Length: 127
Image 1: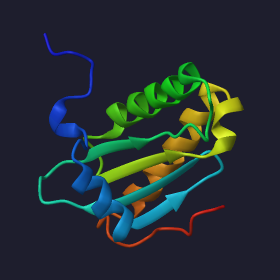
Image 2: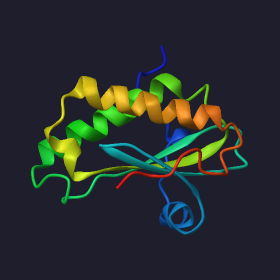
Image 3: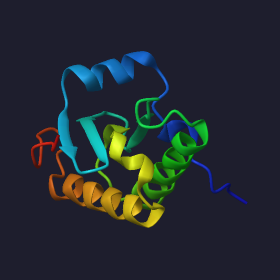
């Protein structure tokens, strides 16, 4: 029986992968999240998370946000183009309900799906 977790091949793990996303990538954002993405040659989407202490000093809150992002990604990853994604939470995310965070993540995935190439930014990021 397969596990419900996110398999290793669906996660960004190397520092170089994160660095590549910081230097040249498309962007999308909302009130609680900012996403960077770029095409990969692997044939499937990979997720990286960057949830800093600036979002919340409390590890339990940062872990809640990470868990919600992974859950949302797990549901849609087979529909996404072959891209590497880095999802960063904004400070505002810490006080927002899980339902609203999942809703915003769904909107970000839809922006990415609307731009199937995974190279250009679908909308400017909001700050």
